[in-house]
Length: 286
Figure: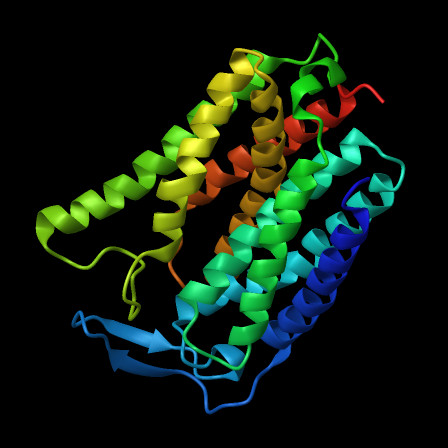
């Protein structure tokens, strides 16, 4: 591995700093507790009032604490496992690492730009930066030109590609629907609370949706880059949708209204990602 020592350093930083910041996010509890404010949009918002997320809304904190927990019990173990497998020059390890780093990159971009300013701002930037460069280096470790030949012929490329096109389209329509309704009625977009813009929706519509659809099409055409991006999307999707399900469950526990239809849709999508994740790994020639 050409960049092994650099990856090792970056991933070690990610594991240590994300573990510390996640523990702080879950267990910090200083503060007087909940209180209500009126946002600049004229909306009544309940603020959490405790811990590192004391200036954020009840809804976002319920999501953030769930994500912190998933990072500890799923994200970090996946990084450790992929690094162990990677030592054997395994393609499975390389793809698992790349997809997991995509999840960490997405997560800490959102943490950097979405949370209200707190004393973990610099650690969030560090995690975002390390995840970005580690993600790039992990892609550079993959022989993309010969990637198609590393998979078995029986790999269901149309199923995997079609699932990604469907998932990307569904997410795109969901977010566009919310934004279009807001623009049509001149009201505040659902979920904006006291924040200034829709960070997650911007990231999804700008990156996740087009990459998901493009990689799906390339996978159906059995293009080498289709195999690469599909592996990243499926592994990142498995991690991210697991996080979204945990978020929605924690929101319900915290008393935040959650659509059972949305919860059911994401649960089915997560099952699909887990199944295709297993199918991908089983069909790699090692």
